[in-house]
Image (cartoon, rainbow, N blue to C red; front, side):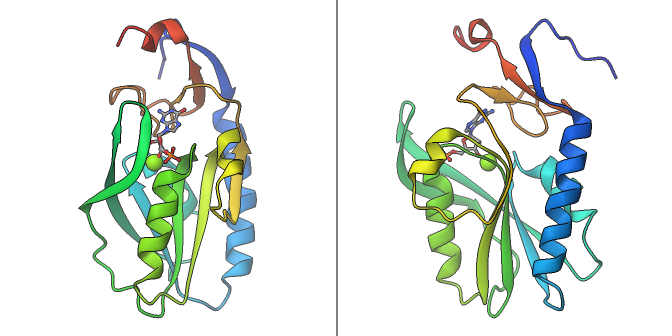
Length: 183
Ligand code: 5GP
Ligand code: MG
């Protein structure tokens, strides 16, 4: 599959680098949850790729479920008020839950999600994210597994979108400011 390189400036994480890192993260997760029944919770839509690739590295008793949330906010500032668009199908009582995310930026959404899931009687709730931006280091969200620490750029690909485009790229790229500046 060819991808038009003219729209986005540089590939920051290649397909191969993603696969290698997911191997390492999956090995760690399998070891940490050995003998436990793990539920992976993906946050739609961005986490679809990382969930699919991480889940394929898990044993057959590991289950998947999905949530869709939307953050209310004025402009670019997230208010921290989150609305559930699609809730889990799974009862979390006594379950070991691992939230699977594509990227943590401010951490506002994830902080809310963590609090919400923790009220549901789970045995444990942890977070795995493929990407983390520098701002995320300022918030009090304990992230157990991190794939890559990224620069403060607008990233697309591997599930990350710009106006719903670019999710299909198999790698992570930084979008040129002139691409998103006028949209
Ligand atoms: P937070 O609540 O951590 O600020 O927001 C996280 C969400 O913002 C991510 O799940 C993602 O949807 C979006 N986001 C944050 N940074 C980027 C980015 O660089 N590119 C894209 N496409 N989405 C981002
Ligand atoms: Mg997301």
